[in-house]
Image (cartoon, rainbow over all chains, first blue to last red; front, side, top):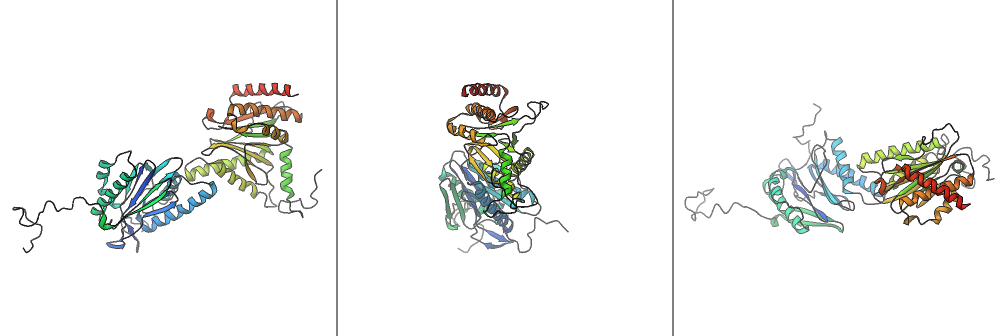
Length: 238
Length: 247
């Protein structure tokens, strides 16, 4: 049996069941991710940093196999260093995304990696590139990825607006990730974000107890006795 | 007569006692005895011009282009052994295509010159090959603006505002230094280039010659193209007039 079963992790392999996203705004990008790494149902790392530096103003968000994405990011990191040396300038996000794509596509059979590349460069300003499993390259104003992203497509489609500033974009990322983490078992922990602009990279951190909350399910089921006719979920002694 | 190598000049892998590699210097001689090529980097573009010495009346005029196009936005003119120049042009095309393959954007002239410089230098290391007998002028407009680089047979390369290689380079350089290149437009540079080539040819008083010019600029939308016929003829005519006045 020579093919690799993509649905099963290889022995000892660790999964970045994940929620990642990147959103472009005028003057920069905000990248964000949850912090959960799992091996099966065991949370191997609950404070993972999935936002990886590849160049001064270019970061990537990693989802899929932790080993695969780390290896790819290392290769691209080195290639961008060489590019910057040979060309005497900062590489563009487009170049970084192309390098990721060429690795992901040519090794598509062996890799399990969904990567979002985002950053700022002088030629194009802010940009976000999504590289899903097959190794295609898609430039988008905003991109979400990982197992948790499936639960928030509706929220993102309904909420995203062009023309936001930095703070509104950060709030959008925070809300989206929080919703994804609330519903996806493979996502959780803390929210890590980075705001990348011409002036630099600002790292933001939202601890698990300060995540934005939405419907918590308490409004419908009131305290026992208050709403006659409504049966509580569990029978508790009064 | 320049100093003869006397035994230290038989191969490129031998130094002379005073630290020179004579084969490389002899390669430069091949360049110095050949037709002139010049390049001008101006405010918004680049112009390349070559003095094509015509050795037979049977040659088809306008054929046998000397200035090559590399990718879409780079021009390459060489002086010296013409076959060597073509080899470098082919290598430049490979490198530019390879760059595009890897990075999905057109190569910058800086990166391409670096690669070609390394390539030319590699042929100065071994006794089994000879150094390239040509100097190459590369002109381009990339994301950093217009630029000109010259690669010598030793593999050394520099960026220039104005460059000249070949027989008439001394006179050409003097003329180029008189110009305020960073203020000229590409059109004006075409006229100046034609004038300079006519000037250096006349000085050499060789056989018949043909002028070949190409340009890259706003009027070509960043592509490396031969100067259009009407502009070419006007520049040629003006150059001949200027020559009469010069004398």
